Amino acid sequence: MPSPRYWREVPSRLRLEAARCSSCGKVNYPPRPICPGCRGEKSEPTTLSKTAKIITSTVIHIAPDDFLFEAPYAIAIVETPEGARFMSQVVDCDPSSIGPGTDVSLEFRLIRKEARSGILCYGFKAVPTASWEG
Amino acid sequence: MAGIVGYGAFIPRKRITAEEIARQWGKDPETIRKGLLLKEKSVPGIDEDTITISVEAGGDAITRAGIDPLKIGAVYIGSESHPYAVKPSGTVLIDALGIGPDVHVADFEFACKAGSEAMFVSLGLVESGRVEYAMGIGADTSQGAPDDALEFSASAGGAAFIFGKENLLADVLETYSFTSDTPDFWRREGEFYPRHGGRFTGEPAYFKHVLSATRAILDKTGLKPSDFRYAVFHMPNGKFPQQAGKKLGFTQKQMETGWIVPTMGNTYSGSSPTGLAAILDVAEPDDLILMTSFGSGAGSDSFVFKATELLPKRQPLGRTVRSMLDGPKHYVTYGQYAKLRDKIIVNE
Image 1 (cartoon, one colour):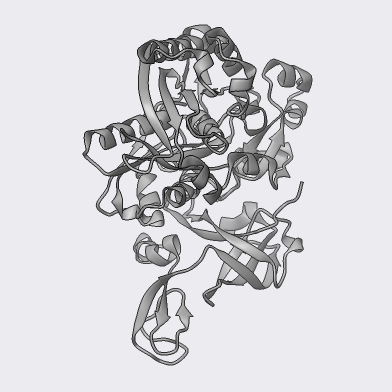
Image 2 (spheres, chains in turn green, brown):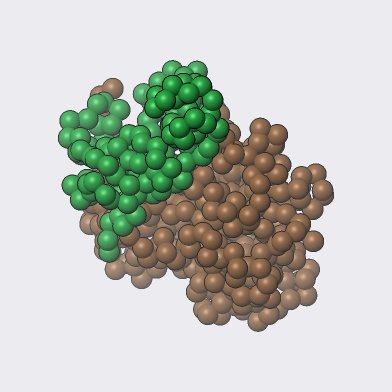
């Protein structure tokens, strides 16, 4: 990811800043100038909770180069209590043990490194509330 | 009076046992367990580093403080494993935690005492009235060379402390620093692993500085070891802090709560600060707490804290050190550990 793009996304990636549509109340993450639910153009800033529930998930066995050392790993669409849905890696768990309905917390993690000398991109990943037992 | 208004800690969930490392190098695990008093250590995930640990710990510190993060006027992260050689760790943290941009930020380095250094400077800025609140953090994903004694201890974790003048969780009654040029442990620019002087890291380095700083702060405050409920010393292994504490007149009972190294390992800049966080998790009003850090090179910072009436009310607002040490964890093999710690080279 080029540095300027990462920089532009800091509020949503690092602080989970979202927008609540003033017309229909839908929470859009990341914020959008026009609500995809009702086409409303006015919104209020809001911050997502650091808890969520998995809606659906899959396990990646053949990973892109940047994630070579992480395979197999789980990717999920999660939903926060505010109703925002987004895709997140699910870590600190057995990837095969998670599925729809799994409660997760959102923890600050390194998302990817731009090769060996590029910038480091941070954000949130999902961790099952009941991660590895014992 | 200034003191701690909020604190938090974070320890990754992955672990490797001393047996697993010993088996890799054909060493006797019993020698490590009994000689260094180390059972296992935390291992950072491939996506965990000093910045992520600091953000998690700092977030809990803000929650326990119950303050507007915009009021924090200074943030210092002490570490010897800052992810960037050039670019601050602290800038990521302030943007992640909603601090700033009207804030002074710097990364500190002083081997294993960079964390207490950050705490010391934060306290000074608050006492002087320069800033209303300041955050000092000690965190590391410590490096240890393969087949080196350090590999049994070098681990990952850290703690964050917010200093202020009102609604204190612990008063800072006194500080004392003792420093000299002692080349017991170092890492040159561009080197991947630190080097050390073996036994030279003991008497002329760790013990000289830890004992001198602690004795000086006891003299300065007029306090005796028996006046303290808790004491924590830097924990390069299990044995050194126990020996230092006993020489100074502290009992096992006073040191037990903060002595988390047997199952956490040495989190370098995060070592004694995380031990302090473990003590703050359970301390009661009016308890006196001693912390003495040690950083190779070499120096020690001593602090005397006194817990306040507010501390028990704020303890449940964040994760406890003990819950992270004893909670869900996953043991890795040496091969997985080598992968997680970037000890395996692959094609680009």
